Amino acid sequence: MDVIGPINPKASNGHMFILLAIDYFTKWIEAITLASVTVKAVARFLIRDVIARYGVPATIITDNAKNLNNKCYQQRMAQAFNAKVRPREFSSGDLVLRKVLHVALDSRGKFSYKYDGPFVVKEIFSEGAVILSDMDGTENALPVNADTIKKYYP
Image 1 (cartoon, rainbow, N blue to C red):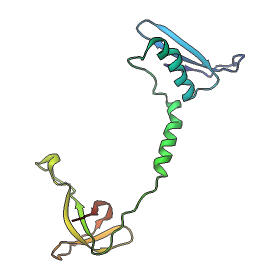
Image 2 (image 1 turned 120 degrees about the horizontal axis):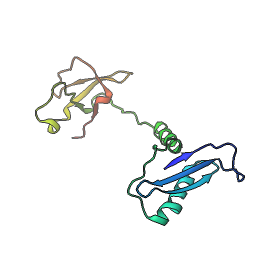
Image 3 (image 1 turned 90 degrees about the horizontal axis):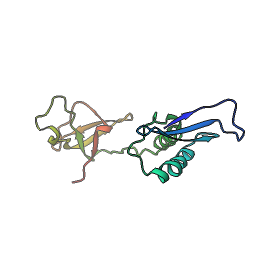
Image 4 (image 1 turned 90 degrees about the vertical axis):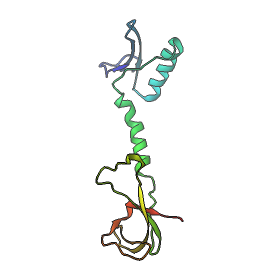
């Protein structure tokens, strides 16, 4: 499937693009002219002129239709970017689990522990750093990032 155009001068009906679908085995060509290439127009062409006549194709070879996917991609990225993020809120005395950061390969592989703990939150800093202590009160020397801990519900 390919798009040819824009073609100058325009056709008498204002169309300036040609949309092609080629069966590479039989060399059969289906083509239509379009005023503008949109996802709706391409989908209508596929359903009406290809699938309704010949059935569902085994594969559709295209240049990934970057011009058609761009608007859909932009909408999806805007939705993901504009989604409200719920900040993690911890307070002193909360029980939390700390993510285990595997520096060396663990012999258990995917069966190794993902979280370690529980720990007690001792102090919270404004930039997301948290100081933890063990359940017996032994304070850890280094603070951890709030992204690497999650609440523990016993």
